[in-house]
Length: 98
Image 1 (cartoon, rainbow, N blue to C red):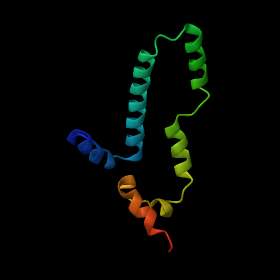
Image 2: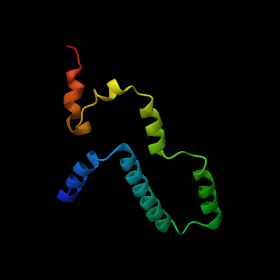
Image 3: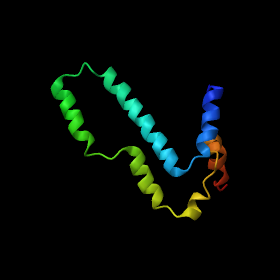
Image 4: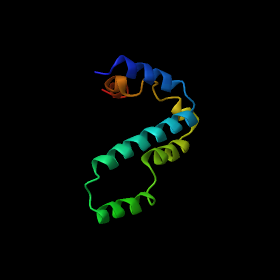
């Protein structure tokens, strides 16, 4: 169950611009990486060096998603339900033919 604070935050995020959402996402990803690095601090030096060298070669998933999204025409985005997955089952059955 989501807390009321999270639900309020979700509503606030909906009103942000794309740039603001991307900025927020970067901050969240950065914090998650910091926590992950702290929890994995027991790695040996060589293992940590290998992980660090690969990070610059790979785009973050959100950048890949934005690149893919930019290729989709605006009229297709307008067809996407605003509630996203909340009524996923309903949207799945709407397109089925008997």
